[in-house]
Length: 203
Image 1: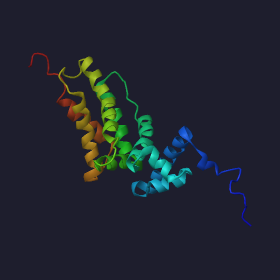
Image 2: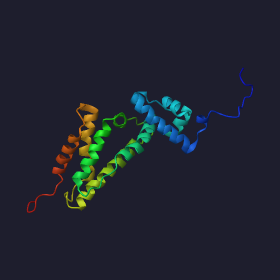
Image 3: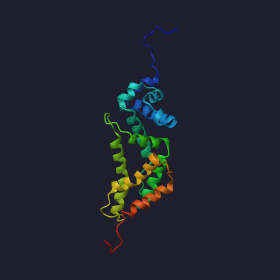
Image 4: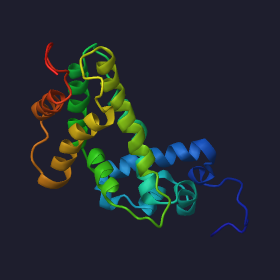
């Protein structure tokens, strides 16, 4: 027989989550659902059920599915891709982009790229600021190379990072060709060939 008390003393614990606790549960659930079901299966409803929260709470916090997945993956990606500082720009870039190549071969990496390729100008979008911040992190390595004299003074740090990462993104999104570690090293060598200072005595 059902209880006649309209206000039972204990609500289901998951639905009582608020603030930082709720946010942490939703972001963790997003990564879990994405890993298990891929991008197509990562709906706001699926994440809400996995986190034990109301779907409306997820929409209030993130607005769109895309923003939710992006934030859920951001910390994970940054942890997986620290910015190296070996003292040599080529070694830094090779280490960084080998890690990126590995990431792009995962479900999470593919989701990041596919979300970035899909645009909806009618909705609040955090993707541009997300990628601007990640490109800036990479540009730090190039600036250090310029300061050490390894690269020409007029080297554009952002362009170097875009040139290398763009080739990796093309393989991941379009060609489907292998994303192996040797590819990342070859791309770094190719791009830095155009950024190295000329030999002494040549203009």
